[in-house]
Length: 398
Image (cartoon, rainbow, N blue to C red):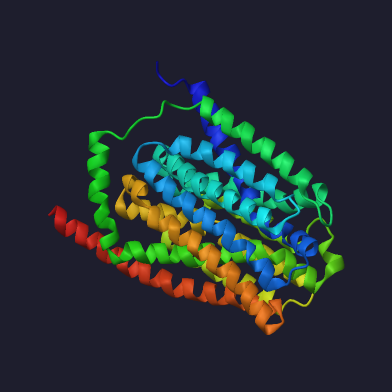
């Protein structure tokens, strides 16, 4: 029987719903960090050790997702990811530090399974409008990121996150069950697809592929550093102002989501490379304000500008990879996602390390400015390499 349109809408809607919930789960670590620091009496360096646990899990999940993707099992990867995120967030309420670390690891595995699999599923179903469709999908991740802090504020106490974890776990489990029951049948890749995937191994012999992966490493590190430390930074800067509903963290993710919402319109006038250059200039302005801020008003302005600037960088970079190497290349894009996970782990940990050694979180946030500056240089390199790659492909076809 053909896959009915009604079922298709439910299937696609569930994918977007899980992406929304994964947005909450991904940035939850930054929102509960002050709670965990208070519960276990941790300094910045000790608090920063939670990040490697989540990102080690995310790396594991990404590697498993790559194997499942080559076997045509992306939907089961997303279902399993939702289940593992549910288990992970429940463990965050346990009163032992080891259990919380295990919870972040499981949450990370779920994130690593879910984010790449759903990105690829949406990309392959909308290859003609890759950048716009991925921006729309990631708009839902951003919505989840916006909701995360008010959600934690409304459901957690100074030392307890059990209600927070329970609500999020139920939503993730329910969405996973719906996704399992909907969608087209799971299929093994066809022989033709297998051949295309085999030929796609040559992708990673080309410098432009690793340049794009490096871009993902730094950019995801930047986003994770902002999401992981902005709440703590704002509390240190202006504790009273941080109690407002529209804290700097909320402003960051609010403009992050707005940027993804308007991206399809902007893409009518800018190609991927021009969009990335423009975004990076905006990010630099926002980060400068963040570092110079002396209160939460200025910090909120910098966070909002940074959120808007970074909003479409990830989906645009993914779409660029697909455009250069073809849509089937995404099933061989595991190194691309792994680099993002490694970037997230290294940047968030380094911010905590620098903050602890210098005695000031502001010095740690300087790493975000360094990341944005390096992205500008890397973007120029990728544009140059991609032009050479296109010329090479054209000569091969001739």
